[in-house]
Image (cartoon, rainbow, N blue to C red; front, side, top):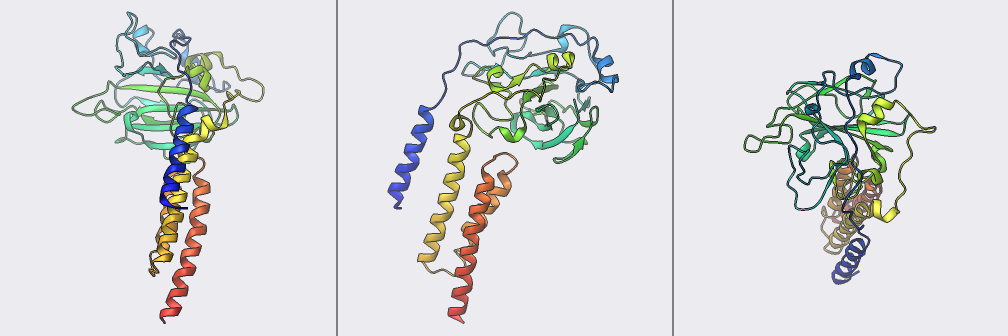
Length: 319
């Protein structure tokens, strides 16, 4: 395939993705803050499946900042507005707390992600397969102790601490007030892509969070109810959910194949090895965030095998 045809194909694919973009709502159902007066009782009862991720609570409404489903528009009941250029809706609940406040796992589960994530500072995601949920804990401290990805946790296990205002996604020039961004969603982390409105680490979204599988955290925990078979995931078109990942994976795979062909044609001894190495490396780096990169790893291994064959053949010919 010529470079012009390749660019034309990628352009058509990009237009198709743009055509499939959803219509954004002008408003979404906004929840009401749930009282936290019984949080200690919930945390102390080991027979309950869920607990709040913080151990210290204030009983007044100032403890809860941005509740679930509220928009970023400046309204009288919102003290702090997020000035985004578009209308967004909050897919989690924010809880104030001093830096160094312990954060606990809300339920038994597997830590699918623990690392830095842009405006989140340090971010932790925990899959809870027994209820078909995953929980998200943002604005944690990267400088304090925290658990790493892959750790199995129990309800109430210490996982991290709240970060200081200059390390929790903020900086000395633009500090972010210390708080916990706490989200709960139906499904598992791997069920959602890295980018787009369906991304697995969303905080503010343009679609209604309820339609994307996000749940009101305080309501889930205070109700302690688990539907039969776990919380159901929302149904969405395959291309809407995975289109971006397929596009990125396809570009990387096609690029690796093109580099391999170019290396073979130019008869360089080592050049055919690099496309496969790069493709496998990209798949490994992205595998915790993008589902389809496993296919990229397979393609990379295949390309690398061809590159090794070409390398050995040319070494024999030169010998």
